[in-house]
Image (cartoon, rainbow, N blue to C red; front, side, top):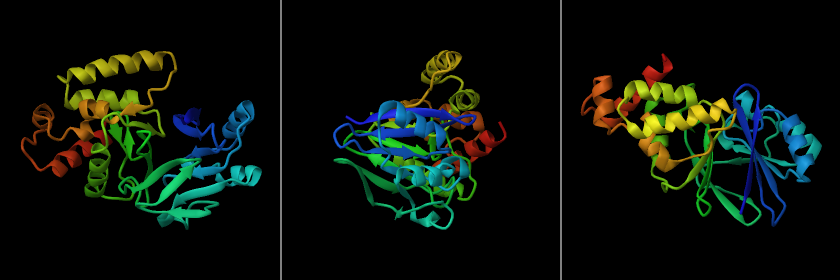
Length: 254
C-alpha cells in the first residue's frame, strides 16, 4: 500500500508525499516550497526520488530546484510546460506512465485551469492526484484554457470509478460548499457533507481526500444534469457545457 502524507503549506495549499514502503521511493506532488518536504522526509527517514508537477503555477513548483539540489530527485512535469517549470528532467503527456516502485500512474491531460495541466491516476490503487483541475465540491478557475476544455477534462475524471480517492492541492472545500448550496440548496447529500466539512475545519483538519462518488452527489461542476441546479440558474434543459460554463461564471463572482 502506498503511504500518502499531506503537508499543509502557504495559506491553503497541500503538498503530497507518496511513499512506497517496498521500494522506499518517495514522490512529492506539487511542492510549493522545500522546507516542509525536507522536514517530513527527515522525520520519517524517507528519501525523495521524484517530484510530480501538475502545472506551472508558482505555488506548485516553487520548491522544485531546492529539492532537486538537496536530494538529487527527478522532476517530472507536463511536457507542454517545459519552458516554464524549473528543473524539469522528464516531460510527460497524455498516456505516459510514471512509476513509484511497482506502482504505476497514468498521466491524463486535463487542460482548462492551465493549458498544460496534467493529473496522475493510479488505476489499480484507485488514487488520483489532480492538482487544480478538480477540487472537493469545486474545480479550477479558467486562467488559460476555455470552459469547454475544462468541462471535457472534468468529464474524464467524472467517469473514473466512484471509489477513486482524489487529492487536490488546495483547501477550498468550505467556500466551495457554501457556493454549491446557493445553486442546489435542496441537495441533502450536499447539506450533510457541508456539516462534516464545518466540523473538520473547526478542528483544522483537512477535507481531502474526497471520492469521485462523493463529488457526483455534491459537486455542482459534476451535476449539470440536476434539474434542481438547472432551475436555480435558469438553464433548464440547456446543453451540459452551457450549464457548466454558467456555474463557473457564478462561482467566479461568489
